[in-house]
Length: 80
Length: 80
Length: 138
Length: 138
Image (cartoon, rainbow over all chains, first blue to last red; front, side, top):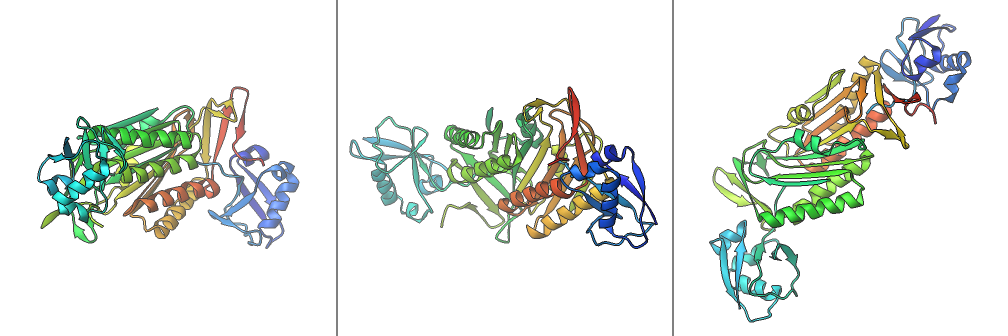
């Protein structure tokens, strides 16, 4: 399946764009996506943290992804 | 000596006025003044606390009073 | 900077905020004390505040100076109202700016807690059937 | 009552205060986060905030709901700014009203502490010689 991953903050700079398409095997989880992102863009390994939101909610590493999901890379937040 | 004692809040109600003149022996302290006030107006004994300010500063029981001092009865405060 | 005021006119949260903001402050904590509509379930009609003015101002200044030193605050403002206040009206505003936010909260809370213990200001609650000097009796 | 806003226009402390005041509240705690002129001694020229808007709003709402329940708050307002901000401008305002003041301070502090940990908003500091996404790296 192809997951279109949106990026904000420093993640946008790292992928050099607003979004990136990641090819994953069907039924893969958040952990696989993170591994794929870190492999493709090693700069993600240097961040203080890396979270993934699916359909506007934080999801843990074992959450299974579907192609239609809205998937967003959440680098360390710094609001306030 | 004669001490003119000013009153605020409930102390004003207790002495039934803005001030009261208390006759004390020369060199008496805050404790003597409190005793004299409580004797003359027993309602003061029922308050949660009773403090005396001399020249705009709280003073302890052993502080010696002078006739020219500005002496104020400070019943329990409730600002804010 | 410390700004202490005891006023018989309406207090402004915006004014207090604007007084404490500074280039070097990252956090401002503000406490706003308003008049509640009831005390222990009994409806309050209005409050009357009175003060021993010169000492109230000097005691508020002492509190602000202590807090400013202890928490290294940039600026502290304490504005207190006197006179007759209606429900929802503001009795006191304390605003504190500090480089980091935790100190702002601590300093602000210290100021209001201490103000309620030491500053010679008294309030009387007016009920339908009488009036009470707040906290006067045990 | 909970009011959450993510705006690209100036925030108002007065508005936030007025939104949380109520007949039953005796204390309002407000936190105002402003832009500091320096970070670790280095002069900041301006900040740029961006957000993942729908999730930022839903995460701020979650925080307000948790705080409202835990501290039995009357009303909680969280207004956050995005876009380009200059020194002294307000990035965030959190206002909490409660019947008693201690809860207002605790709830307000919980909201800002948690907001800084979970809400998908990012800020970039612009210096004379470059720019940095705040807190991105260890």
